[in-house]
Image (cartoon, rainbow, N blue to C red):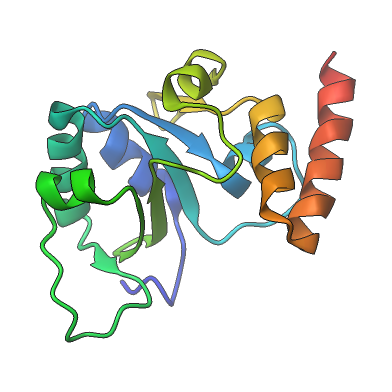
Length: 163
């Protein structure tokens, strides 16, 4: 299966959860979990940066056939915990579609706070952490992109309805 032919976030989330990766769903999938009507075509997650978690993330990415998205084929890339530790934000194509792992999402609170304020939902028998609407709003507003401004407005409406 090619990431260009279909996007299926369920196997991606299940793989991360089954490997005990410390992560929080952000981006459009998180918005959808809160009731957003905007479609999304990738999975964005923030992730813990401790060595053990980086090892778990590496194993999952390898199992998903992850390849750097948008990088020329001849660019050397070693998918390991050391590389993830030296970087932070990576975009991959996987067997199930695009997966972005973001240590430093624009506009985000530090990971520990993002995680502490998250909600937990069930996906395919797994408990998955999803960023709060307030954090999603801050991230969308920080990008300066028109589509993200529109999404932030919708997220504010959803937050008002939940309060």
